[in-house]
Length: 521
Image (tube, rainbow, N blue to C red; front, side):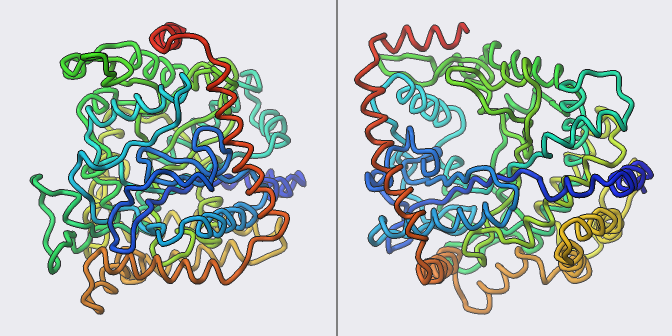
């Protein structure tokens, strides 16, 4: 299927560079709603015992005040990132009293939309900006959509890999431009084949009916209070989740960094009539940061993003343009409600194999026609992925999901063999074997298991997820964080509160001026 993949794997092996595969860089971000003992969205403020959501490096909030976000440091071993994530859960559970962390992507029983609390970050200019950005999301897309949770898997090759790969390729690009172009090649192949990840790991085939209250939909009812599709894999990644006309017009297919950056730059500079009708500051209250297609770059939703760590005050798009791509962020990972962390080591190993294979395969540019095929394949898999005989389009040819999936796994097995050799382990081939079983038997997928568990126990969506939440809490708290880890998190919680107070005390400029300066920069 990909002679380029075989050639590059041979080069890594024969040139003695396979050890670089043990130095991949990993970070995990995981969201989770706080819920009360009646499986309702928590109405309480972000617990002060967890520190400042504005300044804490590892525990913050996403859209809602009730939507926790855990962020690990970067580790060479994905197992270390998972262990750190587990300790963040343990520490947080110790501070939550009677609340639980919802272990699913689709939300709990939601209150009327006006009662969904938007995250607060204090009175500083940066804190106000984060809050108003979320108010803008409310006016543009509604609050309900913003209660969806997921896992982001951050990934990069080690720095030592790039000069070697640059020389092997014979590219005339600068090292920085070559690395960015290679990451964009990875992203293109990810978009071609990410339907496989959704089939294998999608875990949101059902949802609480409160999520769609008063809205038209084509979902089926399962008992009282649950909506689902019988063959769905990830309703989170369907058009029930993140979808809107303004962003659809951007049509970004990730062929080049410069065109990607220019498209986003244009979107954050171009007014959109529907958003102009909302207004920016009405009766002294901000409704959004601006009336453009995107308020800021982060508003653009994609299942994968090119990323670079930014300096204070630096915009993400400017960092990418001036310094190139540093890592990629995979954003299509559902929270698996059967797993205490929503993700496990086997899945992380498979993601590493998938991403390295995408990097090393043929990476032709994506045409407009292929971009449409990618979107069609995606929509088919999220809503009908386990349907017997489901077909997708590959290079204008109709192929069954099962056959194409097995073909892709055969390519990944080549990558897995080199990973196993480098790690002196069989865990990567085992990860492939586990996923092949799901292609041969769709009932082994998380999405099928979710529906089976609900049906077998006569549970609605909320009952099932709450049962899992209680089980995971018990399992996680059966083991204490190390004394050193607990002390570090305790210190961070306290110091983050002090840091927020210092930021608020030091600021002088009026917020209107601050916002105008930021947007003009």
